[in-house]
Length: 65
Image (cartoon, rainbow, N blue to C red; front, side, top):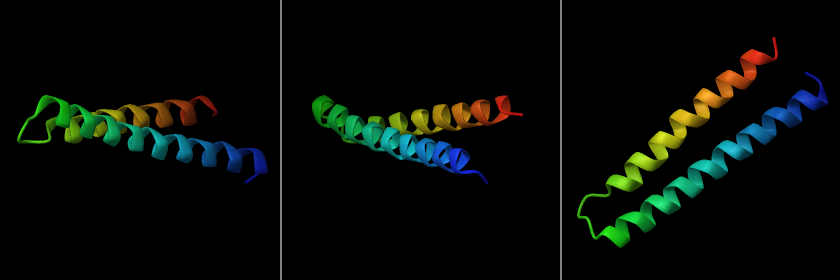
């Protein structure tokens, strides 16, 4: 594996983790703001971002070939 490919996948992993972190943070803030007993935004927002990021990774990795 070349260094460029390694850096590309390291960048994608960093973006993946940062996106999930921001989604959790925003989910917690939305749940505190809405005063709900069940943390629906904390569950749904990261789940939606996880689905989006996996779709994006598959799409980007398939265009290389």
